[in-house]
Length: 243
Image (cartoon, rainbow, N blue to C red; front, side, top):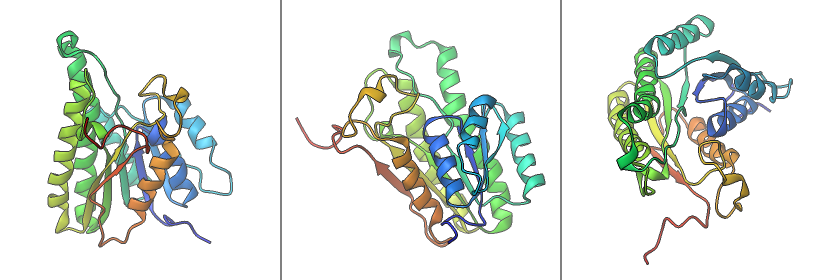
């Protein structure tokens, strides 16, 4: 029986670890042809090799989303390899917990370049192609920090709030062309972004595979349907309620 994403071409950025890696692996298991993009070739190869041989193994392209030239080359690679793109998941990014008064301009710019500008560059190239196709789906990975930030996270929080605005703007830009754009906000997740998460209980921090399951659901919806925004969080995360 074919998977939910059979015959789909999917690009996942930030695919070398965490949520991006989990999404790449699950999409492949759902029979999508997956292109993984990130900076670390050894990690990309390791993730691709985890997919059993009876599935279509993901391929990868070393890419630094902060660099326009790299993103343009990534999409040229997709054009030459497949001639179309059905699903783009923008997961590249990193967290930062520098107190505001200690945050250098260089560090601020690196956060913005990775978390926001990199997503813009990928979305722009995806939208250019999907408009011509009259179909396609873009899923941006946001954060619960776009709803309720942690202290000492001004750079990360600012980019995730901005990413939600970008997503809504793109959803309008793509709507008349059959392009669905949405955002997935994970709560506390066991990834490299947050040191110490592995020691937390499942009630306190989710597995990245659980976030990937929501991304797969969003990606598998009919072309005419868009789950504009999703928030997934561990049951015990102190997000709801009043003190």
